[in-house]
Length: 196
Image (cartoon, rainbow, N blue to C red):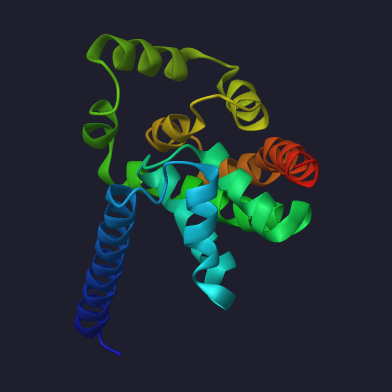
C-alpha cells in the first residue's frame, strides 16, 4: 500500500471517529435535556431500557462524562451498582472511566495547551503549568488524585496530556490508581441498594 493511500485511509478513519464522537455527544445531550441524568433512578431507568446493550451503554456514558463533563461520575457508578451489582457495576464503570481518561489525555496531547487552557481560569492555568513543569512530585500527586474520590480528576487527565509524561506512564497510573475509588463507590452503592 502506498504512502498516499495510507494517508487517505488515516484521514477517513479520523473522520469516522469524529463522526461517531459527534453522534455520541448529540445522543448524550438529548438524554441530558430529556432529564435522563437528573438522578440515579432516572439514569438507571434510561440505561436498563437498552436491554443486553445496557453494560456497553453505561461504559459509553462513563467514558463521555470524563471527556465531556455531562454528569458526575458518581451518578454513573451508583447506576452501575444498582443495575449490575457490585462487581458488574465496578467493571462497567472502571472500563468506561479508564477509556475516557485515556481519551482526554490523548486529546490534550493532540491539541495541546490551546484546548486545556480553556478549561481553567488563566491565572490558575499558568500556576498549574509552572508547578507541573518544576515539580518532582507531579506523578505522585496525579496517582493520589486518581486514587481518592471527589477530586476533579477529569481535568488532571487533560492537564497531564500537555506535560512530558508518556502515555504509557499515564495509562499505568490510570490502571493502578483508578479502580480503588470506583470499587469503593460500587461497594457503597451496592450496600445502599440492598438496604432499601
